[in-house]
Length: 309
Ligand SMILES: [Zn+2]
Image 1 (cartoon, rainbow, N blue to C red):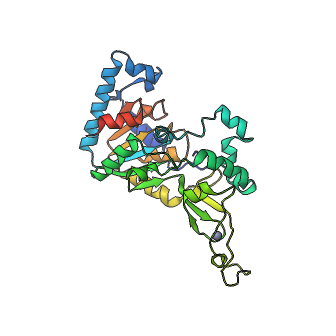
Image 2 (cartoon, helix red, strand yellow):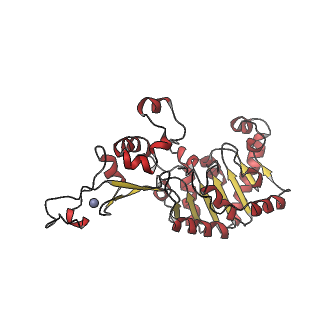
Image 3 (cartoon, rainbow, N blue to C red):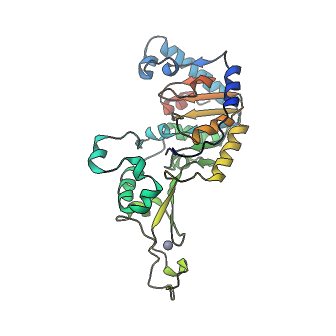
């Protein structure tokens, strides 16, 4: 999820400008993203399809030749698995909640109104029945082939791991990790999903080291459980950022998919890229389109399915 109020990480306008100068020629615009034409209409028109075929072919070449690919993905990767982007607020939402998602998903709100937080979280954020889509599966396959070094994701659903990806850097955490705020006991997502209201720790009280714990039997900790997801007002995990910067800085190919790249600091990580191929796959234009060596406007799952070497 986006982290508005946070310090930009790795923002390097000079580097970006330098890349732009380098790339004034030889760009490949596959579809409508850069021209302002509605993306869905473009590929269907005569000529649009040919352009799309050429772009897919070019991506296939890049995937074939490159052995150091890093993928950076956002909500658009998960929406193709049926996980709603919480920012696309619908009518149903307005009927059920008194606050906007950005308010509910903040640290202050979590601490002050955990019941309301969990009502939203269990309903909208814990989509445990969803399955990986073609994009997740293709990325896992590329890693298995020794081509892809890392998946960096803004999503918290764990679908990359479910598809088989091993090196996944989760910038915003994961719904699959949950910890008791009192004793640190671990809980999986199902425990949180199954909890009636605010999930509470069921570990023996003695684990909490509390003075009133006598022999630890017959009594439970009862501490509030917090998901290991980065809420608004909270900082990103420095270790994950460091690993992400390292992966991007050393990548030969960086594929950005399913993200509008509007949100810092995650979007600022892209500035560390100094490799050969910058590929952007998105349904709508992004601020980085102009820097892309290859720009494909379309469904990320379909694009990967067609372009797999
Ligand atoms: Zn506990």
